Image (cartoon, rainbow, N blue to C red; front, side, top):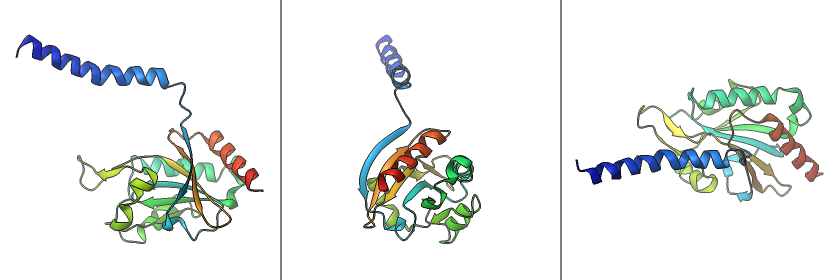
Length: 193
């Protein structure tokens, strides 16, 4: 290998490692872990629920690395004192990203964390529009063919009086910032009155 080639490779790896580290350092304190969206949704799979607000999480039945910890955090929040004031108007929905499971499995999986949680099964065709509509990333795992790699965001969706669904915010921080989420829900409830 020539000296020029080795310098090129070294430069390439420095760019791959150094630039993301510098970006993380520069923006770490500026990130709130929340993106405010306020976008109308075309999500028929979320219709038919009576809650004014929904916390929606996308994952797959049996996911232990990502889904289980997040659903445990949501259960803990849902049954907390701080959440008690608006528990009846906020639903938690788990949307399955793996159509190979039986249609009843997402509901059973969600309810294994909390009997008030809902699970939604989507067919392969229905899954095709999720990435465009909500920016949900998911693909078959390269390491484990029975698993899916997927984004781990939590979506706050508001149901307006006319039934229109509006994506209010996307939460990207882990562990979940309970205070921020509770304050956002409280604020939305005040605005509805």
